[in-house]
Length: 300
Image (cartoon, rainbow, N blue to C red; front, side, top):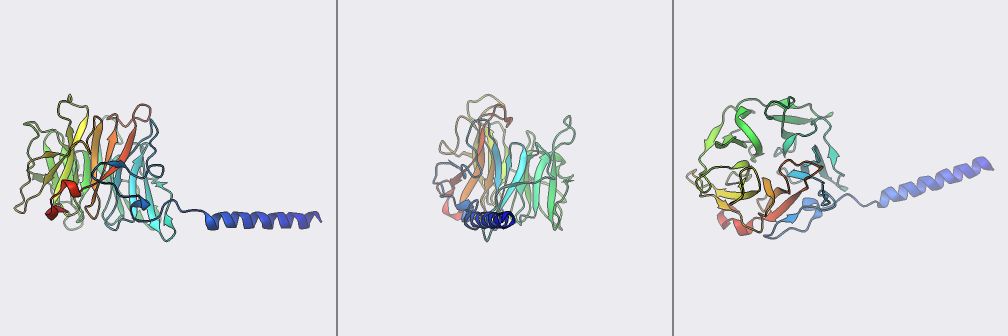
């Protein structure tokens, strides 16, 4: 009798667990994790799913690849991805092979590489690394080396795998992707802001038609609050005068790390109340905003 009762209890437990699994809601469903698109005023991206808006929580560097079916981001010093499947978006998973406190993570256009800055020696500057997706998971980090020895701070990747980056205090560069590598870097002739150049962390459009980067907010002391600026690439290869993206995007906090969506409809960026992204003192979230009001029709 006791054995039969145990069998019944096991069967009931199996059915209950199966029912819970069968009717469990997916993490998220739909394009851009099912989020209602923003307008011209920046909004927190996926609050409660991706962004934890409570104090001393930190998300940054959100990136979608060309097909929009993977989202890569940084959370409290670690890199995570979530992927869109037939059952909806997966719960974000940490990339174990990417070290703690890797900076400026960025997904490749085909979602098979994750780029990031890291230094194994705290006394030395960060350098650009890459982890590659394999059949066994993500590879160990590989340092990319030249021409990225010039790189300082953030970067972004165009649809053709060209990498845009900054050199400390000396402007922006692009490393074209040729023959499955980046043989050289070319200086981008982007002008100064109010006579003094402080730009960094360039976010490039997938088709390389415009750039967004941060610079010190007008009137703020050096090394403090930052704003996002926009420059457009003309048909002759020159770039327009830098334009502050205005109060619907910029605030009295730190805006940086721009990433442009694959369809060029939206910009993702990070807003933080401190520059160090220190979980004990700083709070940061990923924001997104519709770009239609900031770009002329030919650039959308």
